[in-house]
Image 1 (cartoon, rainbow, N blue to C red):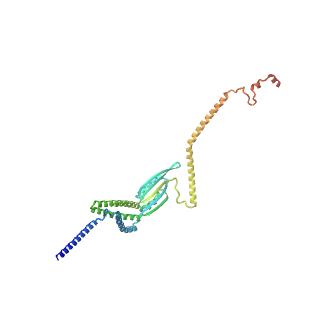
Image 2: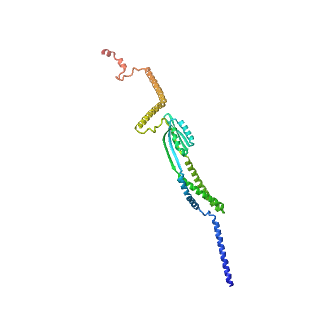
Image 3: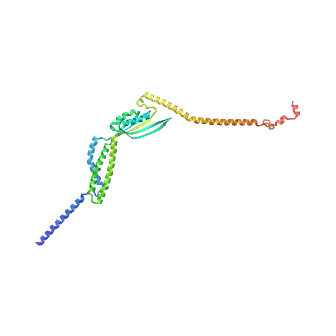
Amino acid sequence: MKSVKTWKNLSCLLFLLVVLFSLTACGSSMQNSNFAYTGDVSSDAASVERSNDAAENRAGGEEMASTDQKLVYTANVTIETSGYADSVAALRQLIQDFGAGIENESESTSSSGSEKIHYSYFTVRVDPERLNDFLDRLPDIGSVTARSLSSENITQVYNDNEVQIAALEKEEQRLLEMMDKAETVEEMIAVESRLTEVETQLNQYKTQKSYYDNEVRHATVYIDLEEVQSYQDVGNSSGFWGMVKKTFRNSIHALGTFFVWLFTGILWLLPFAALACIVWLIVRAIRKKKKQKNGAAALKEPVPDDEPSEETGAAPEAKASGDPDQNSSKK
């Protein structure tokens, strides 16, 4: 009996030791599981968490898209002016009156005959609510020959960008909390590495958001200002008589341009023509002087009498001094 009780006591004691060991092991594993982001966890798990956060915020983004449309307006205007300096000053004043800003400006020149033609290119940022009023005032600067206006809806892209920012900010907050709870160097390195990636992506998305906000808050107007001698008749060029009038006016303008070019060409050729005349006069004088010199030398040179005649081949003396008897007989 005594041995049986002893074995029962030992069995109970062994069972209690096993139970205590199991409880200790479970507590240790639960303590280690409190730190979920270790070096063995890859960035894919963080991406899955961020995707879940993005899915939770997407519904709110779609609701915002239906009420707050993000539109980017762009306009292109071409203006002709016969008073270039005054038009540039008037355009600057108009931009100032509308509270707009010049984002970019450039100027160039080209030659048309004897005159220089000026061109200016402006990139203006205007409040979208005042864009139409601004465009309607541009004919005060000069003759508007071309005008276009377009808009781009970036609502979906903008909302997706905001969802990504919200998800990255939540992940960043969780990583900071994990950093505080890290107990080993390996854990700190793993969290810091992922935190650096998240912060880089977050800055990129925030920069893109700032660009979208600027494009939505300010419409872009591209203005080409060109100096001309005469305005194009944009409104009255349709129809038969309009075409006849425009053709006649262009022919008159072309004829005037031809005479201008002709007169300019003559003036350009005058110095060369004068130089050619001077050279010709010098050459003519040299030839005349040389001819006179040759003539004077020919007069001073004596003609010999004993030379045979080219026609008869007989000497002159033979003709003059023949036999007296023969001469008398001939008489």
